[in-house]
Amino acid sequence: SGNEWPQWPRIFRVDYGHEEAVVKLGKDPRTYEVLTKEFVACKDGSGKLAGVTTVHVEWVKDKKTGVVSFQEVPGTEKTWQADLVLLAMGFLGPEQGLAKKLNLATETNSNFKAEFGEFETSCPGVFAAGDCRRGQSLVVWAISEGRGAAAKVDSFLMGGDDDAVVGDNATGAGAKPVPAEMPVSR
Image (cartoon, rainbow, N blue to C red; front, side, top):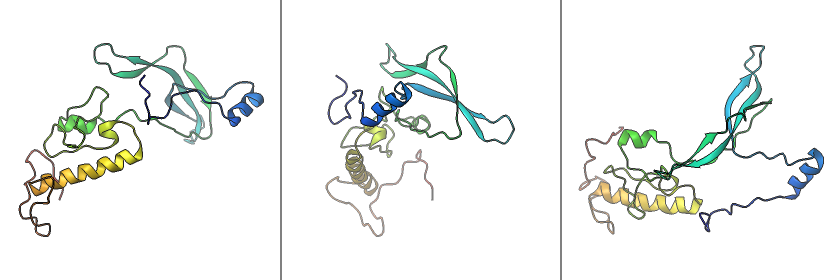
């Protein structure tokens, strides 16, 4: 169904606070599938916030790639008066700048491609774990994958066996050299 455990169930919830807002305002004030287009400044030149312009969006699945992205719904643009704007943003996948610079293979959902348990990407010496590899998930998965990836990085750098640390940790003797194509900051 695309919403298996342990994902948070995708059901419309109404809590007592929502019911109270409906009684007070006459309607549910929650708005979904809205994209912020711009922040509007006061006309007095002070640079203070006067409002925010939004547009409704709909999720569309590309028939060829299977990638789901949102598209603006024409005619739904609206400017809201505001003194303060709080942003609550969802996770749409890792930033693609790094993937492009390192030529990393990605999954259809834009996550970095790296086998669970191995964590190495298509670029030797580059490892991925947590949300950028598996997608948005529970923090316990991020911790577990981070530990697993750290062990694989250690094994890679020490030049050896996943089950044992190879080389002298104090001197680095026996460690693999970093590939020439991999940027290194010193």
